[in-house]
Image 1 (cartoon, helix red, strand yellow):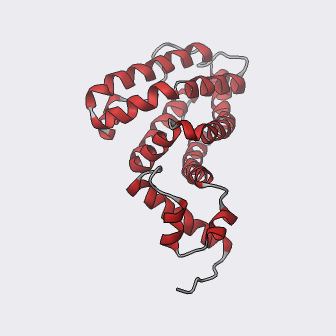
Image 2 (image 1 turned 135 degrees about the vertical axis):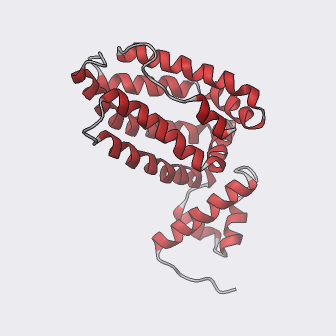
Length: 224
């Protein structure tokens, strides 16, 4: 069959779209580069022109998904009718709901993250997410300092520390999250981990106990 030449951006998005579908249908491990290029009827060299590896492809998909979150965060941060604490909790709530709307892809990411073969993918993704997220959330902490709901002399540094601490919990939380999808009895363990992170955040940011909520039990019920 004759291969069709396409605009580079069109071709790249086409590869991402097909890979997205295959990762959900077959899982990350069982989706090979060969399987993707066969579906697209493109040469292997064409794939590697756009992506260095399958992990690089997954990272691009993760970036695509993350950009939706960041645009959502930006809209919340720019609102004049919300105090900093409401903004922070709304950002967490909306992000979780966005993940809920793409649960299958989320599961693919989570499984890939805890695979020892993808340590570099996890590290790169974490570094990038922490840098971008701290820039956005640092603005909220600055606002909270002015309003008196937060009390930290390091609004950007403190949120970066929180993100890195949360990232270090990945090995504990992700397996529980995946088990929860199969067995709802793990819900309480997942909630306990999040409550611990919330408590740590409150201490670092100097805000009242119980003021930060990363996840509601009802949202986890929807995931289950």
